[in-house]
Length: 127
Image (cartoon, rainbow, N blue to C red; front, side):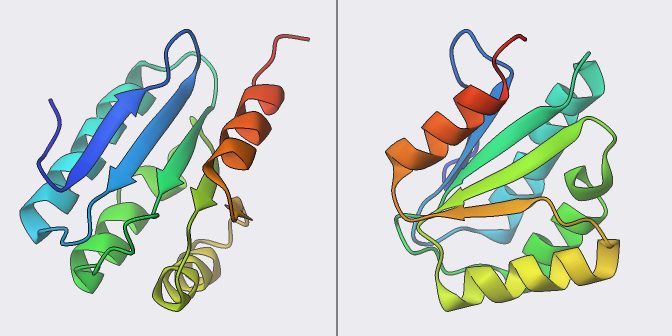
């Protein structure tokens, strides 16, 4: 299930999630998206990277975004990297806050969607 303003999907034939934010994300949709992400992570047998698509320049519900990430997937053992594309000043501030509070430094920033997908795909190739 996906929400209307924050979408979660599995990149086909991969172990990579895509989290796409629309411009106006609602608090309810943010909570639902993090809950859906936890479902994937709880079932994972290997760490999953999450491509976070912020190209629509979302207006973040701050409490739900930071709290939902921090007390949901951000500290999950099966979370690999957050691979973020299209970050704003607010998104980078949220990222710094999450890294500071969790002491995990697993956010990678990209300007182009194709670069983010290439990074996550390369990283998740079988050895």
